[in-house]
Image (tube, rainbow, N blue to C red; front, side, top):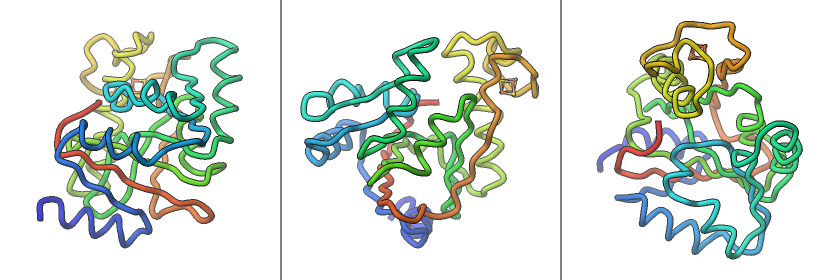
Length: 200
Ligand code: SF4
């Protein structure tokens, strides 16, 4: 099977792995299975492109700080840390089974680690790298600059979204880099993998 090595490694690391040929199939699976709970979101171009927050809000209470700014962002971001379920993507994933995420304010990474009954990691195959080193490189030099560009931040990488310049900008989105080695204790975690390029 395609991606057999990654699926085996993620399963070994404690994640439930659900594989779909495309985002439509994954979206149907998610909306069929997440009902009657509170759902927090981490900022993600992948989740945005799937319109998941809006779709899940039909049957759940959705808490999505990514649509807020200023003080409201922090207020809603704190609430998202204590929802039943949390959705995030990843900036990179290694075939050896580690999930890599960079964060500027920390709400997305924090939500992926603690406070929920279940966390969903949703990503397309463009996030997959053969080694942990390459997944970290991808997070720093592809995902972060392109996200800075998408969010129109005042960082040197945002102009072209081409590479990391290791800036000290107040808009820097790379203040922490989390490598999740295995599923966190005390919660369920499911990887939703889609066989197409999604997000940054
Ligand atoms: S450290 Fe600065 S330049 Fe590098 S990707 Fe992050 S925001 Fe961009």
